[in-house]
Length: 177
Ligand code: IMP
Ligand code: MG
Picture 1 (cartoon, rainbow, N blue to C red):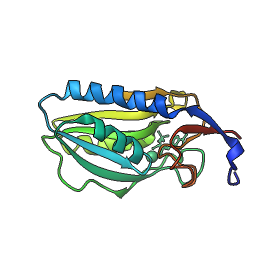
Picture 2: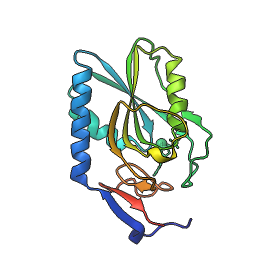
Picture 3: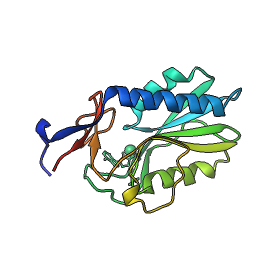
């Protein structure tokens, strides 16, 4: 696929819809983790804007760590192979861990990460995703906090890229082919 020009971008989720979803998720998380210290593990790069908006609404005791995984290789299809570019910095045993991801598509990427983290014996391990695209799922994944369920379209914006483009868009678009 050649580089898309902007008339291939169609707005799917406006800024205010995203903001409402983030506020709802933040309220759910605050409710569930009352009195606890929460470790957020965000998956780079796609979750960085979602994470930034979310943590500013959490108003609770949190720590943040990051992982970076290679699984997509700048194509519009998942490759099925996942490796760590960056693993977590500190041990997580005994901690309440919430993974922050942008999109769950086949489930292969997040399954790899959750399997890895589970072995490190956290006190609890939950998943928060901005978007779920369930139609291509290959592995059953339970998403504890979810922004949107979306059709099988390639999306960009609000941190999410196509070949490193469009991350800075303040809303979410799909790419028309
Ligand atoms: P999965 O392993 O198939 O679940 O793919 C999940 C990963 O692929 C996410 O972390 C995203 O980074 C990326 N991804 C999946 N769908 C899209 C999309 O529509 N736009 C951009 N990236 C996507
Ligand atoms: Mg990703």
